[in-house]
Length: 268
Image (tube, rainbow, N blue to C red; front, top):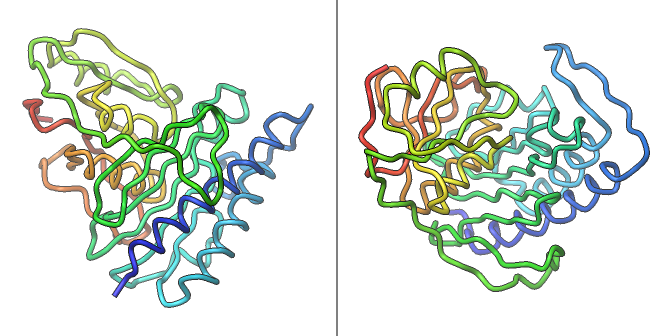
């Protein structure tokens, strides 16, 4: 049985500590950028944040399996309940100093992300589920206290107007296929955001729809999906509109759509 109260407290604390380390490197004059085996970029900030989070979670919750982007050995986990981490989601945003990067930590149970934290240290925004799975945004003047949470505002998705939808799309991965799909809707306006912040913008009611027609991994999306679900939102496969599930072979996602449920989805 997972102690959700302790887990959420720990995920929040570790995300702040990791975020502080990320910001030290982000604000430095220069930082080294290298390529991983899949040609995706990695920095010292990814690795420092990963060590903080993975060491902390393994020490505090040794009974729960851990999957983290930066540790290939963890990608063989087969348990149905596991923690999943992207220590720095939006590395391209980090490298280009655009600010839209996040620390993502989530719990997956029986294929469903049930608890999560998404922390955007450069934006001063913290989104998290509580022990019951309800999503909140924590108020802050820019600095989050590691041990004492600030005021919490419960989040709820928008009551979407299908004649005037607000759509959010990726900053770094926008393509023609995504634009073609968005054109099926009556769009009032569009927002561009990086990393898992796109899920959070739907959770806050700032957007209605986020289609992703591109490659993502479960660590990219689990925390954002947990946050969105706790605010009443949904994430489904692009092709069948079935719920997006976790623990898939290789932890790779199909294309998906995140949305506020009042939005009427169009076929693929």
